[in-house]
Length: 160
Ligand code: THU
Image (tube, rainbow, N blue to C red):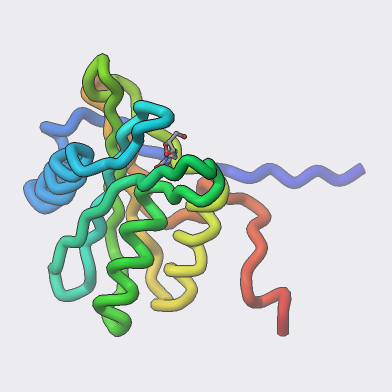
């Protein structure tokens, strides 16, 4: 049987090794975690996006007593950014998280539904999104877009 090997390239670094621009968006996302509404999980997630004109938009997870009605930080942020700036491509996304113990040491990983929304945003603006997953000990940088995190993904091409 034939086999297909899919490769994912992720850069590992500390926050100090990021460019000043990337540190700025990570800091915006870290600051945003203070506004997270995570009364059920206690897991405070922030997200920040940089748009094509340099605008930075941040957001957080918003939970609900009816659990599935809540929304992750990534989708809250992307949907808000796209609602406010429908003509500006999302170019970079940063994601940190913290609990009552403090910030996560290892990079947080976005859930499948968020990856799918990131993919839709890339397709919408025809721009791959650089994704920075923040941890205090190390960060992961996915340079070439979310497909690296979502192999064999479903997108609008299938609907044609
Ligand atoms: N959450 C996010 O906001 N982003 C992620 O990437 C993973 C999970 C939220 C959803 C829920 O409010 C809490 O974290 C625990 O799952």
